[in-house]
Amino acid sequence: MFIFAVMDKMLSNISAIEKIIVEKVKANQPITIAEGIYLAKFSKLSFCAYLADYIRRQKYGNKVFYNKNTHIEITNRCVNKCKFCSFYREKGMPDCWDLETEDVIHILNSKKDEKLTEIHITGGLHPEKSTQFYCELFSAIRKNFEGIHIKAFTAVEIEYFAKKDKKTTEEILKTLKQHGLNSLAGGGAEILDDKIRRKICPEKTNSATWLKVHKLAHQAGLSSNCTMLYGHIETIEDRIVHLEKLRKLQDETGGFNCFIPLKYKSWGNSLNISTEIDLQQELKTYAISRIFLHNIAHIKAYWPMTGKENAALAMSFGADDIDGTISDSTKIYSMAGSIEQKPEMSENEICELIKNNGFVAVERDSEYIEIN
Image 1: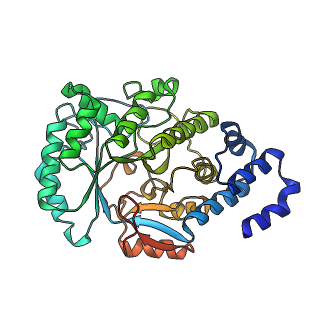
Image 2: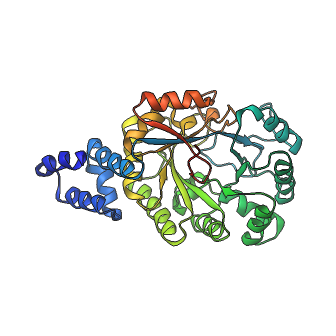
Image 3: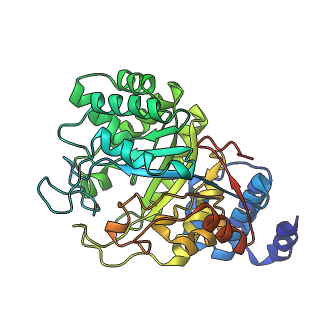
């Protein structure tokens, strides 16, 4: 392989730890937490990129995946007030919204020509809406749009429903699945360290509960994504330990479809961090994620957060998925100051972007089965 021909020439210039990491990557073996921290702190971006790109090409060759989807955020009302969040609003504010079932059906009807395969539903923790509302919503979607994959809710929302309805997590997951839920979103993980969570999202689900909800979802036959919000008050060590917790659960359940690194955006929230990590650190995070998470099949560069061109660039640093068409229907990152203030790409635009960056665009469904 070209990469290892290059790496062999570099062996005299890399550290003993990096040589061990190279051998583990060749053998598809997991690296340790200490080795992950070393990569993040001391290895060159080019070294991490070589390894990450090798792994993704071993898995997928020149393919980059996308799907035809839309995101619907039911509401930005929320009982939590996370310090990093630029999204939530209180009732009565001019930029507060609160969709009902008929609104969602109207939105989906307006997109029938797009031949969507997935609807991604999430939002704030609404003070009134709970499981019954979403069961009725899913039933209406199933009645009007047979076959569409419903991805909805973070672990935070599932825990909230269980508390609000005085039911177990297992009961909530079973009920939602019976009414049409197919998979969970991966948000709400932030950093899986409770000292950090107490500072940035003190009212939100703790680390153990986030992991438990996903474990129970996987056991119930619901796959999910997983995420990491990075670039705020956490350390490099915190990031790697976070990845280790995800990797450990994946070893146990195999239920994570993909991992999505989410860069903290500084605009419009109360965390009072004025700077964001630069592009080099962002790309290194993708690369290390690909190297460390050997057992999670896909790494997604979520283009409404990182921007179209940077998402395409991330494909050379281990990412293999760019998400989907979105249809200008998500505001979580645009309200936080993202480059993409109108997050929408047509299928042709996605394919052209992928092609122009040297890859082959492949449409997938929500479970990463290729669509011919």
